[in-house]
Length: 181
Ligand code: SF4
Ligand code: SF4
Image (cartoon, rainbow, N blue to C red; front, side):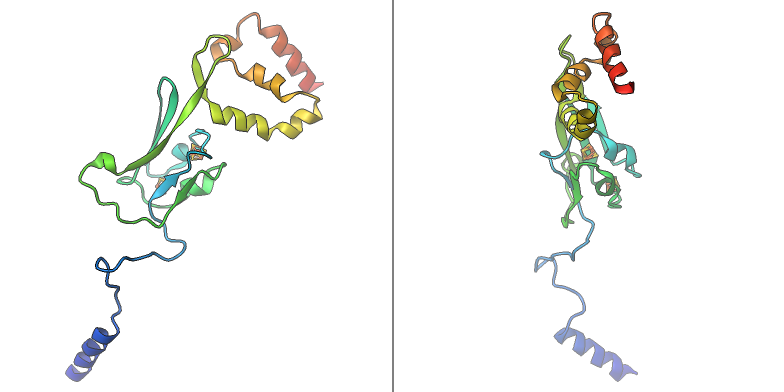
C-alpha cells in the first residue's frame, strides 16, 4: 500500500495533474465563463441585461446626457444570462479570470450610451443608438404601410412631455390612422 502511494507521488512529479499556474500563464478552455465585457459599438443602451441579471450585478443610471451601464464583477455569478438575452449581441463573457483588485471600483466594467435630445425641447430622453436601431428594426413594416423612416423618426423623436403638446396631436393621430387603416 505504501509503495503504491510512493509510486503515485513519483509519477505525479514526472507527469503533474495540475498546471504550473501562476508561474506559467493559463488559458481557460472554450466556453469558459469569465469576466463579461461590453461592446460599446453594438450596445444600444436598452438595459435589458440589467433587468435580467439574476445577481443584480448590472445597474444603470440615467445621467444628464447618457445612460451609464455598470457591471460589477464582485456581484456577478458568471451565469452568462446577460450574453444570452442581449438582443444586440453587445455583451460577452470572456476567458479573463484574474479579477482580484485592491479597490472595488476597479472590479467594474460598463458602457456609456448617449441620449437622444428631444427635437422640441432639447431634453435628452432616450438612448440614441436604441432609437436608431428600433427604427431600423421596423423598416419592413414601414415599407408595408408606405411610411418613410424619417417620418417615423420625426414623430418618435419628441420626449413624452412634448409628445402630448397640442401642436403635435393632429399629426400623430393621422399617422396612427394610417397604421390601423
Ligand atoms: S448590452 Fe445588450 S441588453 Fe445590455 S444595454 Fe447593451 S444592448 Fe441592451
Ligand atoms: S454573467 Fe450573470 S450574474 Fe454576471 S452580469 Fe451577466 S447576467 Fe449578471
